[in-house]
Length: 74
Image (cartoon, helix red, strand yellow):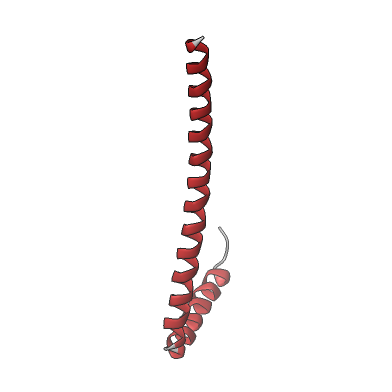
């Protein structure tokens, strides 16, 4: 009978480990999302301090895209 209890207990502990693993994965995904959001906000705030750089980067990127679209296809 003790063998049956050991199997039941090991099954329950493996289920608990699996649940904890899933919860840990969810927590880490949530934490990464929060960190990513915080980094994006910080970057936007930093860029807001230098609007001329944002405008310059935008103009430079549109020029590059314009050149790519103007090149004839091979």
